Image 1 (cartoon, rainbow, N blue to C red):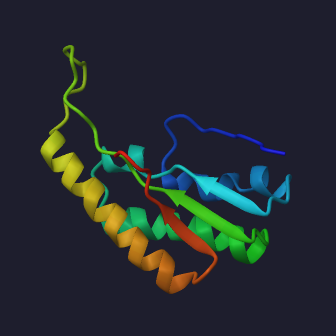
Image 2 (image 1 turned 45 degrees about the vertical axis):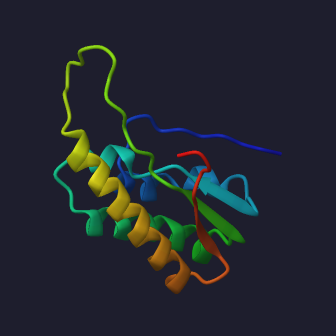
Length: 123
C-alpha cells in the first residue's frame, strides 16, 4: 500500500510534530520531500539539514521505519511570466546545492544503510 500525506507550505521544523501521520501506517519505507519552503526563508542551510535529520531520526528510532528516503531539493528555473514574489534564483539554487550536498553526507554518516538522499535523474 502507498499512503500519501502532504502539508503544503509546511517547514521542516513543523513536520516533526506531525509524525503521528506516519506512525498510524507503520511503514517500512518513508519518502520525504522536504526543505524547499525553508530555503525561501532566512534559515541557515545547516539548520534546515538538522531539522530534516530530526525527522529522519524520529522515523527510524521511534516509529521504526526501516528505510527513509529524502528526495533532493530541486533547482528553480526562471519563471516564464512575472511572479508576485520574485526570488534571487542564483542564490536560492546555490542554497539548494549546499543543502543537497550536506544532506547526502550527513544521512550516510548518521544513519548508515537506513537513510538516503534520492537524486532524481534528469535534474
